[in-house]
Length: 154
Image (cartoon, rainbow, N blue to C red; front, side):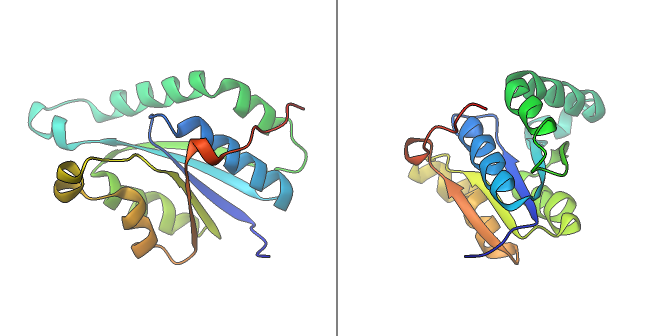
């Protein structure tokens, strides 16, 4: 079985986000690996509005930290996880995720959630998980929340 030293976990703010966090921390714990959580705020709807992307990303970061507080606290206190951090950026999701977060981090494993887009939406915007599988040079784990076992409470 592969040993992972650096794990990148993509957070989407959707229904699978908690499952992705739990799976990433579980694998990090088992492998004594560091974890980088990343979230991209889709800039496309805001590009013509002159929005303050710095404020938007800071708000996104605060929201994720609040939602995942219990998990992040556990990670900070887990001696088997040497480090973890959260990065939030704005941009075109798949492209920004790969180019500004994943490639510079050089992970051994990328974890993301399945979103289940409709066929029409998939045809227009594509799938982030498919983009990751095609564009990163490491293992990619796509998490479905219904297949994730509960992470035991420490």
